[in-house]
Length: 238
Length: 254
Image (cartoon, helix red, strand yellow):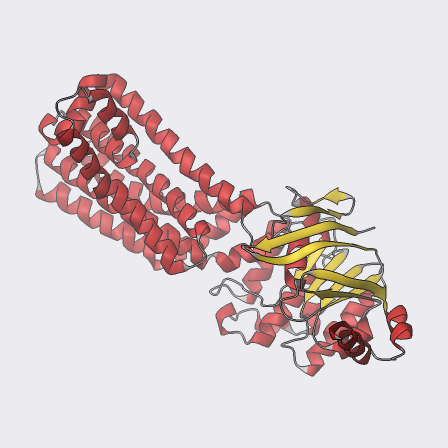
């Protein structure tokens, strides 16, 4: 089991963002994390990354409790929803710096996305001059760079043009075949339909269900994720 | 220590550190060249050190922390501990701001007046720099709002540079009929700016400038023991706010 989350809870002031969420992920899964805005998806992801400190519960990544630990992040690639980078550094400097700081000689770098997005041509551009889409490309390329076993993508295709989105989706599928775990949050059901093997549905900080795609589709009798989710949400509100 | 290198590189590239260096060089140069009395030069510099250095350090460090938030966010997704990020930021900033001070003030002063007081001015100035950088980091970690963070930093500066002395004076004035010497010494020890001031004035033998609290301090402790006591206090003062801010940063949700 790659990630095991046990009774994770978190509140910001009085707002309960996560209410005792328990779930486990294994290798060779591609999990779509679905839920309305503010349902706790990003907080869940950030807790796994150690950016948000949970109030209760525990998170085990690769058999290690992540509390007071940072080494485990070697095995995680993260693509944030909004990639923020030092404004005055160039793309080239940013990649150079992160490679230099991590310096994992044994691990072969995965620069496929850097090439596929033609980023080397932009190496001299400063981060502040970049469009939202180009920033997304930089974030995506960074998250795959160190060949991590777990890849977490927060709204990966939101700002990308159709061509780049296809490139990224191909990459995700290709990586999953290498026995990796991929977590994706998105509101674009078509993308998730293509990519994911499992669906994790969150509502108001609760984990509503965690099922395989087939289970979900047979239960609802729909053959598309979008329709299936719509049907489920309707049932929830009734 | 690679992180320190990158942060330092970024800091040196920003024109602010250069500007600060030139400003201090201008002050020191003017004092050294225009006055021929050693103690007058050192006294003028002392005033700069206890007012300007805390102010610049605290404001610059606060702004720097907010401007680095993106950089810190990138680093946090990497296998790097928060502690390492925090310490690297602290070291880089201390080297840049403290280094600018030591170079701009230290070189002219030690060339023209190489004595104990000059050395103490350097030590005191450097300590004040790192103490106020640590306080600035605490403010910046405390609130996400840049304006509030800078405001909080300014409050620290105002409190230690101006308000605190007023409070001591008020206590001394109101309780002058009681034996309050020990209390005054204790109160003085709780303010790094006062400790620096008294430490240097003690060595300059400028008892007139010490003020009542300083005089009590010297009288009570004696100038040699007082020196060691002051340095120890400044050391403690540089460690506590630093640890305080580090603890806050380690528990923060980002």
